[in-house]
Length: 139
Ligand code: RTP
Ligand code: MG
Image 1 (cartoon, protein in one colour):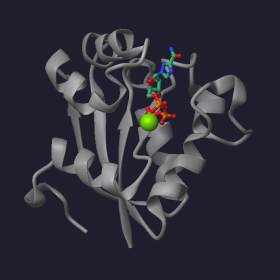
Image 2 (tube, rainbow, N blue to C red; image 1 turned 30 degrees about the horizontal axis):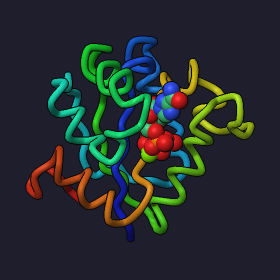
Image 3 (cartoon, rainbow, N blue to C red; image 1 turned 180 degrees about the horizontal axis):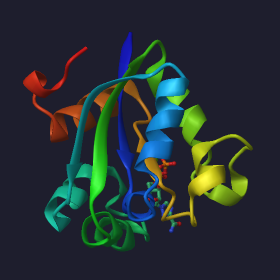
Image 4 (spheres, rainbow, N blue to C red; image 1 turned 180 degrees about the vertical axis):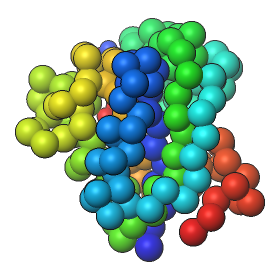
């Protein structure tokens, strides 16, 4: 059993898509081990996305993820959860996302792409501990 970290981003929360996205997650066999709504501060978003700090989109991304509205933070569990969740999300740019993926169905554009997912075991561990304490995660 592996854990990954997911975010339902502001564009999806704003459009009342939380339920539809959670339905997709649960129907693919993920268990929701932790979940909370939050409004990120700019500082939290910058720390979370620190690996992207030299990228041209860093300022837009961190502004969007904080001032853009509330998000839903999730810890998901399943065998091969990291790869499985990235497959269900689809490509970063919804124009490139495969049919049946969350980004193909719901994303607005390459930035407002509705969901986040960890891309490695190391980043999953960092991202989970960035937002959740051990006592908030129930297997
Ligand atoms: P994520 O981290 O959110 O799960 O998405 P990802 O791995 O597919 O994409 P990544 O390259 O890690 O980029 C993180 C987020 O930054 C925004 N982005 N904007 N304007 C742009 O060219 C651009 N490129 C990326 C997206 O919100 C992306 O998910
Ligand atoms: Mg990423």
